[in-house]
Length: 452
Image (cartoon, rainbow, N blue to C red; front, side, top):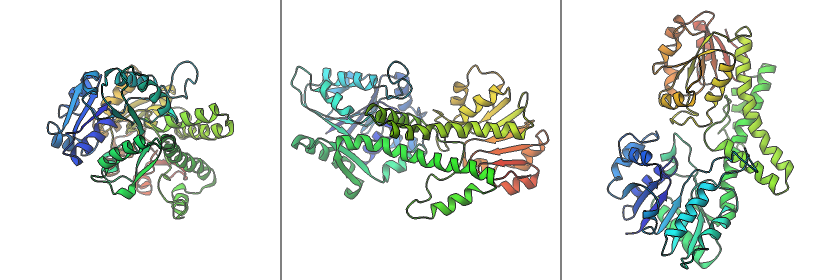
């Protein structure tokens, strides 16, 4: 039985290995992590991450051909293929601080593999890495004194939290990059054969390793660019009386553009977009391309501007003071369908509101525990599982995560329990604004005139 090892049991490693285990029952799949608590959670029915359908999938293969282990080194030599999915955060110190990728965890893992392996391995980059990282990884692996041969591949993930299982089961493409050598091509084919258990061959793209590494950064940058672009248009819509939803609908019907990622809101978040764009800007600058670096840097700056602009709209509408006013915050996860709050627009907006000395009552169907951790120690902040409880006595409601269940709330009931005038700020543009105005709310939406 071929053994696959994944080092890193996070948002990418856990779901990806569960799908491989399901689709490749003849393969033994092991997931390891240095965090024993995280591994214990994967071994339980209270998984460390929320993803629709993930628990049921893990339960169906766990103990059959999917196994979770604390500790890393003792599992390395048993594996034929090693996927590495460790954290690559933005560097917070020294040269490149705030922009460059911090690769210390990747290098540490490469050295562990080199130290423990006694037979040839295929090592697969699953983390999002700067272009040409594989060159450094190869140098570390091949410096081993045992003469062990390693083939390093790039196989970036293209998962969206909230739809990760669908993205894995029915991917737009699987990208595998390797060296243009006989050994490199053989390694690429071996990994491609795993995915071919369920992915049509025409969707499995093979390329050189540098293009594969850069494609992941580029994909995230292009998606984030579209969000920042429509949010820039939303600001102009509010000044001119146009409606950004109608503008986006017209633009999206152009087949050359398409409708995806053209919904105006409070900005993008999550663990990837900001980190990857800043890294892309840093790479451009490091390679002597300051104009290209400035272009990508502006995508991030406009995203920050959108959040500040949203808070300024709240401040201006509520008579230029938020001090002592209770604001019910609906949603704290960075997007619906996930419990992840990393780089959540809601978190940034809550901190800006707290700077204005507002009183916050925060609710979220999946991310409330993470919200408590994120805002731990901040004053004037309470948390409620029930959105009606969160809104009771509030001066305003701010929708910051577009959970579908919020569209079905009884806003008439919410309105009755609020201070008057009652404000509603839709940061996701998902509610029925005319209906809300008819109830009595003063409705403020992204990229369109206020109502009520």
